[in-house]
Image (tube, rainbow, N blue to C red; front, side, top):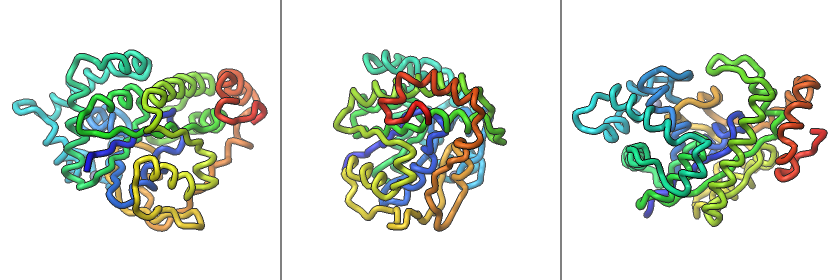
Length: 297
Ligand SMILES: [Zn+2]
């Protein structure tokens, strides 16, 4: 059975951590979180949010220590290799997505990502890996990996909700203005669209709002996309039983366990100040209609 990598694209604060953790409750599926940051946050500790979803540091976590060891070149220390990987990733950023679709970067990052996916499959025993890194440039590499079947979920959330989320102080990451968040929202979503167009048969669009209002149906669509025949992990009442996970970075809700409702976070409706709402609406306006959002929000 070929290994499937289901890559979540889109901009941050769109619910990708929740989606990944829900999908991971389907048989044979593992959610690895934002794999892109395994070396920077996990090994070097230079990013934010350095703990694995199991609560340990990545180097101490048995899952990640096995994966890191399998992907490390002989004769190179883990820290030196991680520094190499972070440097290579610099040639594969979101703004490079269109050029990566034409030609992958000529450095060892694509081969490292490919080898890491295969090591994850080996260590986890899973046949489907969910990567919620949201780097369309990395998602664009998947079609060049001969042993991997790529699938893409483009996850979209109302940019006003995203702007509100970025304005809130969070312990694990910095804040952004509504302008900055929405410019990045537009850029990451356009890059995600380019990746989806290159793999139409293996891609779906999903709005956060549809995910949280009809989670069982939304998850069912994704399981259909990858040909997964097991039971849908979302119960008819919209809850899911969350077990443990080994996720790299992401929303702190990745530490939640047990029977969990999938709820819509609507705090932005009352919390987002009028000026920031106007800024986000204006900057996002060319894409709002396309994604089914009202200008008035
Ligand atoms: Zn772990």
